[in-house]
Length: 437
Image (cartoon, rainbow, N blue to C red; front, side, top):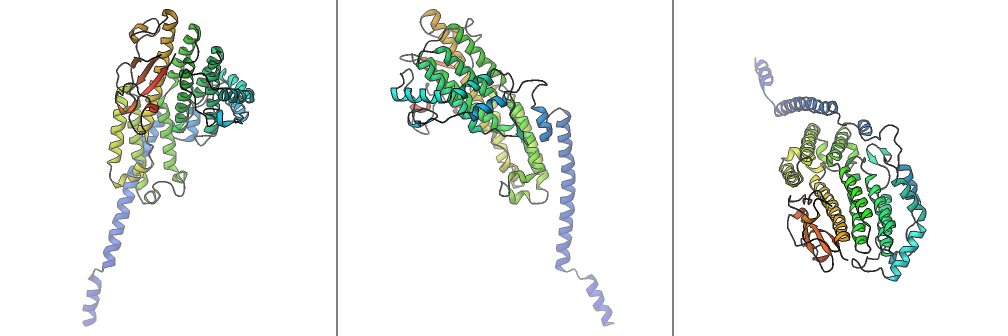
């Protein structure tokens, strides 16, 4: 009888490890259900994107960004040009490509600088010839591997820097026709990146665009252009502005993020979120967060410029306020608010440059610059361009000599046309286009 009682006690005694196993089984079941449910939902969302014509794999991305059938590709000529680039021997006296700085706007080049730049351009005659040849080809598509640009960004920057230096040197030598060619070739080199997928190519492009527009700014301060040359440059700027397609860039970036979700090893063995992405059930949440974040950013990128940046900043704040369960997305999603700021700055810079060209045409016809930008309408501009950062007309003030056109830029403050070089490090400044002549 005692044996029967002992057996009953053993049969109904609930040990601690029993409870532990039970809890683990429940957790595994819940995680499995969660993963299955969310995986099915995210796969449906990806299928819906694919059905709408958006790329969701690198193979689809290649199709999405490919050249028109039968189009000639400038990439090979550009790559030959990059291979022909010769760094300056005397980098101490060559601005941008070397250590020297440009003199104040409108100031002739010091003799050592002029000589060093002349030698650098002579050594790069073949490179410049090939850049000019490539600029005459309408389409460009660099080679890719898994959505990444293979042509080194530094090669493209060197080409843009060379054209920047060439434009300013030609203007300083009283050769506006050669300066126009260098500026247009620089714009075409920037445009050659318009089919690049993802953010890296777009950031390289906006950087190149800013450099060649700075070359135009300095060239206008050094020599006089004809009305025909000014109009031609304005038309090329308009064309370039029409090819800036930030929403399309975000669509291609979303594709890259989906591929990273499929294969997290693309982040590297020590990439962001390594401990978290190894936890069960985290990847479905990760992808859902990515799709939500990118969809919100793509929608924001299509808003009117004055509303766009506010929305991007709100999206970023919402992402940062998510709980620990969303940590992986918080660590791996790109900082698109900053890219949105740079995109608007590039657009503002283009409008400032286009307005400066209209001002110079007015100066040629009237012998003076206008008192107000409205005097340029409608003969030289359809309307006074708006500052994309606040929606107001771009600012204009006279300087002695010359004038300053400016945007308040991403800090939202009107600092009276003070450029970065005019203020202490970290102080607010405006995005300016200044002609001193």
